[in-house]
Image (cartoon, rainbow, N blue to C red):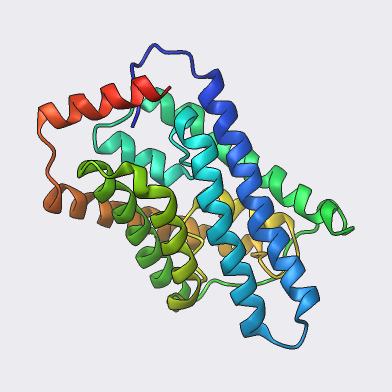
Amino acid sequence: MSPRSTEPLARPVLAEFLGSMLLAAVVIGSGIAAQRLSPDDVGLQLLENAAATAAGLYALILIFGPVSGAHFNPVVTLADVLLGGSSWRRFLAYAPAQVVGCITGAVVANVLFSADPVSISTTERATFAHGVSEVVATAGLLLVIFSLVRTGRADRAPAAVGAYIGAAYFFTSSTSFANPAISVGRIFSDTFAGIAPSSVPLFVLTQLIGAGVAIGLVRLLYPSTDRQRDQLRADAATAL
């Protein structure tokens, strides 16, 4: 998913920032809209939030995928490095852009709905069930992405990732954050999709555990030969 270590990263990093910003705006903004449109029905709020997120992810991956790979998520970039498709240089460039992008997206979402630009969330989510949910959600997300990449079906990732996250909103008690950057970004909106700062360390830790589980499973289920790895890197270089 990533080309040569010496290539310029300005365009891919900008794409990761913009994609992460818009993703956070979609997640948080649709949560605010759902809360206002369906104030007495939490289930309907969640459905509206999940549907908007799934559709938004599909569109954003199509937009930014050819430029950066459309990671929008530090654990996706980290897994790409550890599975041999990317470099630590790329991870160190992408991760800050993803975090700053998600924080910016939270501010944008607040402004879009005439709320204070920054409001620190008070929604506590640090429970055992939420932690296990984030392990499962993150592992599942990475399995979706890298199973498709390693079997030559990367073109199906936009739909598959959107569908998985939309489903995971409902089958996990945490509503599937599965992303350290957006976990940090959601701190800055005290709305339906927010998370209290004290809950974020558990989420990030369990997301990293989920990434470790997924990397092991990908290596076991989809072993990649040297020729396949070279082809993946060549495909990524062409796309960029």
